[in-house]
Length: 427
Image 1 (cartoon, rainbow, N blue to C red):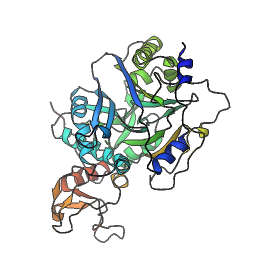
Image 2: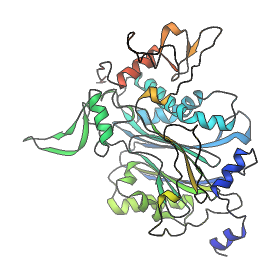
Image 3: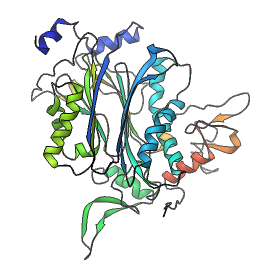
Image 4: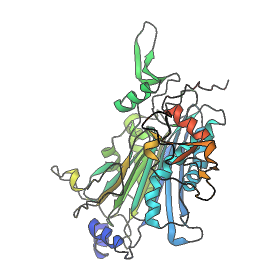
């Protein structure tokens, strides 16, 4: 029996609007199950990945299980990639309040990802090492997918209808004018490599250091304007499911997003990951570490991901994505009755005060506050609100949260070019 015939015998797929309506009414929504595969080829041995499918929002409660898939593409050594792989998840989870509902947990996740990335960067830089890493970090909870990224590793989503969507943004100076302007405004210099005779070659880089990226974890020798603040995007799938392809730039330098998706359609996840790597190798050769993780989000009752029909030339992406406000998940959600993906949240600002919200975690009785980044409780006299500025500035609101400890406030100021930082170089 063919794959299409088997799928047709199973329960019918539910439109996205119906699925979300059931959740809003508190009705039971059947979770998907995941199948995944990983493949890679090493050139320098600096790529690492994380697959963890047994995470729990509430300890010892299997009904709260969620999964994490991540790629860490290291450069200038492997220490930043290894450290981030070992510590990032715990730092993210520590920034989410305990005892909240699943809906509240998903609302808190984007901000927690920002805090977790920044905390991991601070902790790694304290080690005095100069390596760095890109990060593409994906959390799957039921039909909700949340992707956070710094650097040029990438996550794409291939859904019913044959439309391929980016869940991440590449932070390459060559391709991102907004990031170039931010780096130069914060005190960095952007230019190409100068060779003998004054000729400029290669991609745009940040100096000192010569990094091609504007965001990463680590890279102490480059400067604080290379920030660890991630682009975060959260989407909800219908129970038609979908396929995620998460990969390092060894894939994306060889294949476009559409090419990667098309190269492995119809294959199970494990073979799909191998096929993407094979296609990248055939297209470009092995010029960089090449790592790929494929995750199929499969409707319950279907043995495999339902087949993806060919995309019609005149199909508009707007029929698939019913996009809502990029800055808030609290505004009214515009549902797409015929869509298979709903965008819940997207934010990419590199300004920390724009990413941490306005909550004020202060104990009213003791006056103790919790740092929004490192989650350490401290007296108010030892930290500042992210809204603090000059005492005479009308924009300064030091009594409003969230609050940062002195260490994290120093980090924030350095990332924004408010404090001169001298790169640390370990000889």
